[in-house]
Each structure stands twice: as structure tokens, then as C-alpha cells.
Image (cartoon, rainbow, N blue to C red; front, side):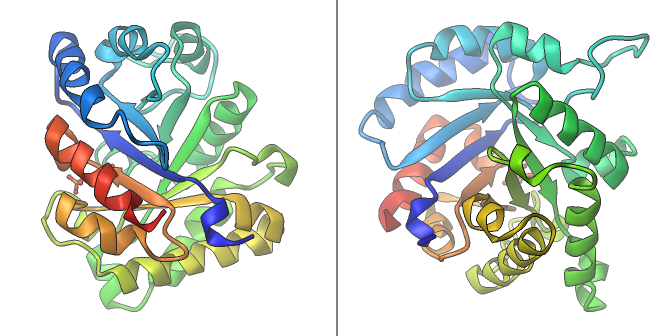
Length: 258
Ligand code: 13P
């Protein structure tokens, strides 16, 4: 498949920022700024408490709303957790899985990523599975090993035919929130490793169709260079997605390749 057959996807991860009122105020400012955008799919992932208000405010608009996390079960005695059925019931369509902050601070593992991925697919939530190496792993030349393991375990036991909506986000941990962006070449090389692994596990049709996003200090001024490369199909943006002007500019700059 030619690279441009994969539609760019630009997603915002708002992490633990913004109340519901702040989230809808963002949308009011943001929509007019991206009204000409057709080249990229846009997804906003707010905090759980802002999900219902954002789903309502985005209805009929070309912005999808996703969660930052979920449990893999439908219900149960799991204090503080949110289930996939709860997310779909309020109209969320996407979910981040295995973000490095979930792995680092909340003990998520490749095994729980696998359970969540299976569950998201079963509930028709578009999964955005996050992978990426730590700085010490990169320095020890272990990036390929880390990515291969993360992708392999995430996809274990999943029928390739069920992976139609899978999105992977490559987020090198050393680039998250640090202002230290991976160079386009570093990102492209990592994306090629991930795509090759997908092909080995699930076949080249899945590898060719899967969008692989880059995340880690994406800003308006580096979005064009990152998103113009063949294997980079969009971005997962943290800090720079909190401001409507900056996030809209990222979308405009990233879609320059299209
Ligand atoms: P920053 O864009 O703030 O580096 O965050 C990246 C990220 O973690 C997105 O999920």
C-alpha cells in the first residue's frame, strides 16, 4: 500500500489536565481553526470526567473523542476503574492503551496491554497502543528488542483479521515532556521496526494498513518534518495539544505532506 493510503491521524492526549468546562472551551476555540482540515483524522483524549461533555460538544463535527485508559473487563469490583462498555455507552470511540505513564506509575505491563487491546477490539473501540523505549535502552542499543517485545506481547492471541482499526503510537520515553524530540530519522527507523514486526506477526496487509503515530515533544515547528516521512502516519501530542492554537497548527503543519 502506498504510504499516503493511510490517512493521517493526529491525536491529543490531555493527560490529567482540563476540567469539563475547560475542555469544552477548548473545542469552541479549536473548531474554527481546523474547519478546512480534511487530510487528517483528529482525536481528543481528555480526562475521564470531561469525556461526556466533549462527546456532546463534538457531535456532528469531524473530531473523535477517546479515553486515555480503560479496564479490560465490562464490570467488577475494581475501584477507580472504567470499563469498555462504560466508554462506548457515552459515545467514546477511541482509547489509549499502555501509555508509558501508565506503565511507569501504574504498573501496566505488556500483558495488561494485551488484555486491554483484545477488549477494545471486541467493543469496537479504536485502540491506540503506545510503545517506546527508555533512554538507557536506546543507549544500550536495545530499541529494536524493546519494540519487538512490546508489539509481540500486545498482539498475542489476536486474530489478524480483528486488527483492522489498530493504531500504534511510538513514544520514546526519553522524548515525552522533555522537549527532546526524536529526529525524524530516529522516529522513521523505529516505525519501520514496528511495521516489520506487525508484518511478521499479522501479515503485510495488516502492517501496511496500520497507522503508526509518533509521540514525544511534537510541536507546530517539528510536525511537518515528522509527518512527511513514509512510515509516520500522524502524531500523539501531549503538552502542545492543550492549547487550541498550537494543536490546530500541528494539524495544519502535519497535513502539509498530504
Ligand atoms: P508531550 O507531547 O508532552 O511530550 O507528550 C507526549 C505524550 O505522552 C503523548 O501521549
